[in-house]
Length: 74
Length: 407
Image (cartoon, rainbow over all chains, first blue to last red; front, side, top):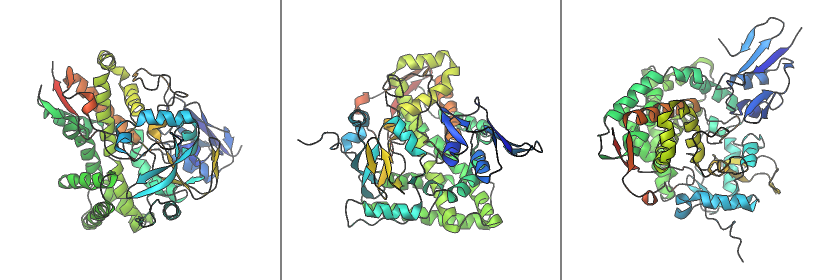
């Protein structure tokens, strides 16, 4: 299996819209929170940039082949 | 007859004193219109967005650009007085688009995540205790100067590494820059003084680095060439300026809201778990930023039944959006138990306030301790005599005379 998985922790998300603004292809607004458009995506730096920008560190991006967590950084 | 809504004068003293009733008329009108808005030294013909949903959409819309050079050109093209000169400022993360924005924001965003900010809590609590200890029991004090401004300016000054004896200078410079009744010349003098001082400070830190954010930014600059010299300067200027006045307004407007709504104050005294929600409600009720920072249309944008052509200036009123009844039930009522979040006081999208976690934490600490320490709060002048800052950008009090008593 290749590609990345994307999750947003709804309890941690505070709805800043930073991810939605940075990468509308990958994130959308749902009421006052953000949710991923797709759970599984092809690797893309734009997605990482948007995920890094979350001040709540609510976005988790994982490399599905290796299981490595790309965001958040430890 | 003249159109009453388009005649609302956003630069008038009356507007600064009572923006809410005028914004309500603008929202009810339902049409996005052009007004004269003043940002720093220059009056501009600009579109003003007042509805919540439109505001939220546009804050995250990449067609509304903040790219410095083109923005300055758009300001030039839309100024009211042909003789005005636009001060050319270097770009910061607040006035750039991706990918520059992404790079600049990442340099700072890492320092301001909720997790990192939480580590500052004990230090900020201690600082708040010191300040509260200086408020004499039962005597009249100006809460803006003793607490609301004193705390955040000390916090951001210390984080950045701006010496305490220069904090007052920043207040003076910013006061001149944000006010509607200082001349263009006075604003230019203040702007130059601030930048001259920061240039010198950067040189000092370069020679003798310290454990502060200016030193860290200098190091990042040297490290990977991630930050140009003008970017370094304008980033530090932005952090210092954006870092305290807004937080000060959050504190003083919140105290006033609780003074005027004793039932809400009583709720908070009874149940301290309501505090985080109360801070959000204070932010919604009186957004410390009236208008969002300036944007221009990189391409035409349709909103509220009109098409705004390219290269025009757009201001989004956060103060107005937060009082939109289409989003918030009874928007003019302070309700610390209000469940629906989503106020726009920190903005929305990629420019969402980088300091929001810090501001929220300062708010929780200050209000928690104020309520604990002082059982009785009184306003010492009638509320109608309080004056709101004469500014199109900020919404806040210059003075808040109160008497705080242990009981």
